[in-house]
Amino acid sequence: MSYHGVPKRLSYGGEKPFFAEKDEALAVNQPHIAPWWFPVNDHPRDKATYDVTVAVPRGNQVIGNGTLVSRRTTGARTSYHWRMRQPMSSYLAFFAAGRYRVESGVSHGLPWTVAVSKWFGPTAQAQQLRLMKASPGIVRWLSTQFGRYPFDSTGGVVTSLDTGFALENQSRPTYPFLGNGHEAHTTVVHELAHQWFGDDVSVRRWSDIWLNEGFATWAEWRYDETHGRTGAAARLRQQYSSHPASDPFWRLRIAEPGHKRLFDVPVYDRGAMTLQALRNRIGTTDLLRVLRAWAAQHSYSTGTVEEFEALAARVSGQDLDGFFDAWVRTGRRPAPTAANGLA
Image 1 (cartoon, rainbow, N blue to C red):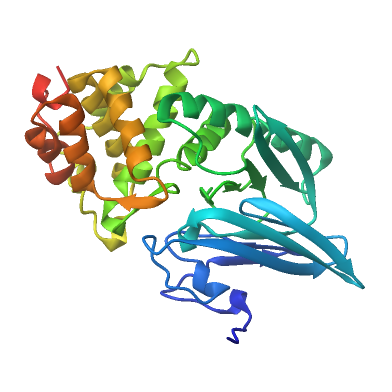
Image 2 (cartoon, rainbow, N blue to C red):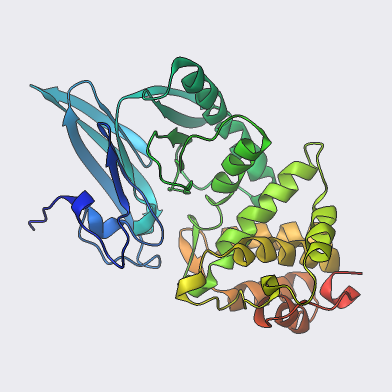
């Protein structure tokens, strides 16, 4: 099969998701990027394993998903071969090409590779490298909450390209420059939580997206409360009280947001609120049992909102239909009741 072109020149729906500037290139985006660089049935439920080989001018590096299989230099070009052995949705495949500070190692038996663009100055490079090297420890903590880490390696890549977003590329998220404060650390927690919720267990339909974004946002809350910051229950109360019933924040039905609003703020924040309210309703032990069972039962596959609701009801032994209707299916503020996890 022949497939060729200049991805940066192509657009669809007004978007150009392939980034290339200053001798650095990045194939990364959501919900679509894959067709910009390889032929594919671009839907998250059609998963596959991947071998990706990218040739770049000698002196440049390529970072990709999974494990580096080989690096070969012939003349003026070097080819990098990366392999993702576990099934992956097409939009999670990526490569970053340019000049990077790259470090690798093994932490608690898990290989890791991190990279930071050399277009940053030495101080910024060192800062971002320290942040990326926190990834294995964060993964280890997340595994205590959600079960075994599902992939062969971890890490992260910080590029100099102005993407405006971080993305949970399978095994190795990609980031713009993050700084070094709490928000930067939280972003890394969020993208690594997606390795369970979004990457290992992917959405069967894009309308199920709160199962990705709400779960990863709640993981931020849970991480904070177990590391000396605001508790998740307090975060729920703050969010609830800061959005009165008349606030448009409540209008979106997050179980069916529509294709134009897949990544709106309520999908993230109300998704996290839903999980914390569920925790208030069924207890921490049962909520973590639900999340671990969800990751285990749908590993390397997909899931739907309806399947998650059924699992939560089965694990908790409670009728949760009214709870989920209030939180994800109605375009209004849930009543502050015990049944809704708010009393």
